[in-house]
Length: 268
Image 1 (cartoon, rainbow, N blue to C red):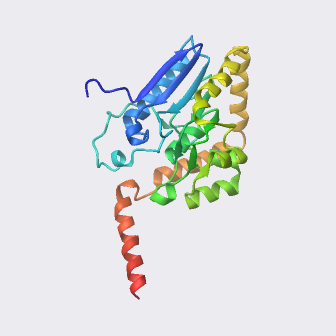
Image 2 (image 1 turned 180 degrees about the horizontal axis):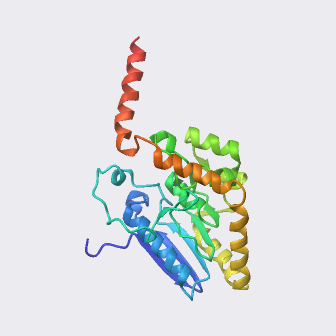
Image 3 (image 1 turned 90 degrees about the horizontal axis):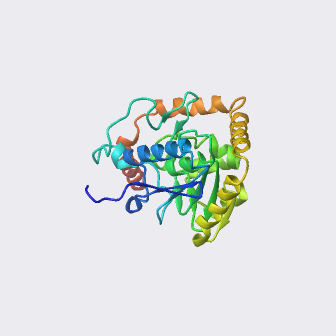
């Protein structure tokens, strides 16, 4: 639509690119258009000679509410045409569906509100996280009857521990920002109005270091994080996500069936 704001905004200042998911009326849900624009923005920042660090945030009030289920289920038209392999978000060779491309620069997530399901997976794919006190985190895949494929079972367990990750995934319950800090999911919690200034200061600390050293260290941390069985875990999650049926298109029908079964049991 003419005159409509881009669904992803990019601002570059002092060698820091701030990428903002800009679909606030839908709580920054990941439509195909948004995922492509996000991929392109981070890719461009990775290639830009005037950028050494990236901040990823959302337009208030949410960070990201996850994948746009109406678009996935076909209730609304596709917001963009499909892309060829290698040109956008896709499943990696290790099974992880990458919402964010791997670039040689840190991507700091500035979580300003809810980060739910696919939105949580986007956050988990960042290098590290800073949270506003308004931030909330949840894995609600089980509530919807769909399976994660963007790292929720692997990256979340890596961040908060296996048992806590299992609890989050099976219950769908939310963590507050302070709870996320206590579990190691986020590095810092700050007042909402301080989120971007604080995150920019952290990014500036990185920018002011030797960039060859920064990028070598970042590559090293990625290598050790993916060692041994982690790639196998991603591959298992990827197989699960690709083979799970019936999928999002039948969520409403399954909910109706559960409700009807509950009414029958109540009458018996």
